Image 1 (cartoon, rainbow, N blue to C red):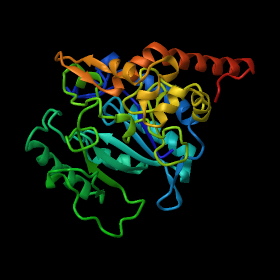
Image 2: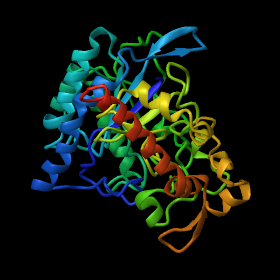
Image 3: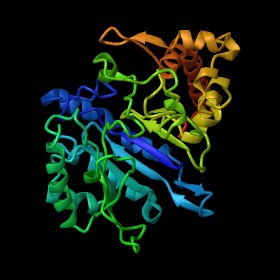
Image 4: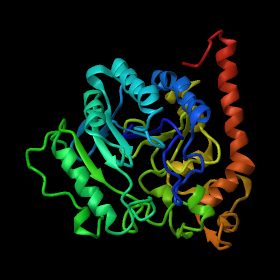
Length: 360
């Protein structure tokens, strides 16, 4: 695949108003141990059921390139997560893939990153670090404070020869990376800044979680997140450009980072290829793969007018929000979720009938 987005834990040290999932929040004592244990119980099975080779064909270069494996939370670097789950998962990835490791990137707010933690991450094979808190929603980052924080991070990264790159789209020149050395090697560790900024792909904010309940999403019906990066477009095309899935701590997988109302299956139970081969038979899944969620219900009489009517909901501020993701949610809840559950149970029954303990 071109990219995998793996959320290892819901534990975070923040509870941001714009977060796309209510489960991302602080947990303490037993609650923290319990939420981290979900990822601890699943990560080895998840890695086992990923493809043995992680790569994608880049038509621009005519060559195979390593899959980008984005590891995220929550916050992976907090106490109770870092040593207990994140580092063991990195070591397990190294054990399976060795010299064929995917390109490991992590997302972090960056405010708890230290020299020691940075050294540990680099030693364990992290090649890219995304500082994902550069917006006015994160506490302590509003206004000029974010730019003071940026300079602090730049100083830390320079001390370890980690090179800044740019995500693009930034309106403020202070967010842009300095000119890159033309000799930047593919193996050089890099970092970048991004956040929920109006000029980036998530600028309107996904109609999900606290962003929706707090009335912060400005997406409308013409905002097609499915056809954007991190959406469902081309997710089924294993080994090709655009293929990406999202993985939850328990192994559930989704065709987009927003996450559909039901998972396609679980990597804690089955191999990725087996799940894809099964769900790809559904016309609705093919519609997501085309980046056209408004076409997913044709076989059940959901014409474009019906789908749009089901794509409107009132948010936490009482505003009526229209977006295709909401229509997708409704279709999954009423029809597709049950079909996916049935397919999953059929696959697991087949494994059981052939005396296998799991589909892996």
